[in-house]
Image (cartoon, rainbow, N blue to C red):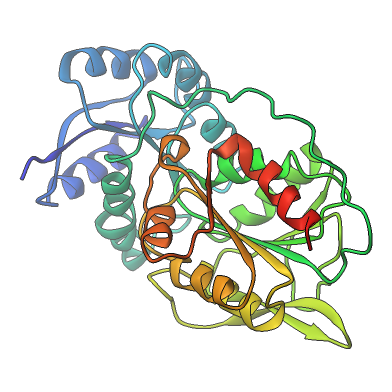
Length: 342
């Protein structure tokens, strides 16, 4: 089996050597070069043709985001950003990075070993199969038909993973204040979901917040499950939809899990829901989307051509959970069409 060729870009010599040494211990990965700044990285890309690049954002001579913006049009390749807790990571995703991983905040040996031996190698392996060359800005969609009537008993549930931060933003930017309450699980490290929600809240027509137990699911508002060790579920209290954030073990390797959310929507909202599964590795959300469909909900899956990783939507499609398979720019329009018939 061919090894994944990796370029490590990190200005700290200690952390750079740590990454190189540990990544090389993974039999599926070989580090072909390392660089301390974007200029060394550019030369290494030309010389070694890596399959994946890991990128620190705080670099000398040129920051990582500017480097991405200049790099991607000339040398498109999958990039995994290694970032401390900062919303700059979302600028990096917008500039073309495939995924990101949180840099260990402490010096604890266990935390550091988990990062270099588990988290980062997994991200690299997923990134190695991601599509980047075709990631162009889609044309603006036609105006969605405004919804009429009382839609407060409806709910829209969305799940995503790798590539999902940009995919979710693309969908909900086309949602108006008339959209029923939206609940989202996006696989993301703890701390980043709050920043992501604020960023979307500042750029979208709908209001967006990191969910808390007891939050009402109401029209014009998007609730994003917090990253960490708890799942988000939809419940009904006194006739109103709410979410609960409940600690629990990982499901399909994730917490929060899309399946947990979708299953709760199937049980609580039944045929008064639309489920959407977007780009991501693995199968989280597929069975939950099928449960939603069997309960009478309408379901949408992102198509292969517009996915960064056609994993979760493919599994859902293959098991019959996807009613409509759509290109990313058309998902909001399809959502409005389905909601308009409810």
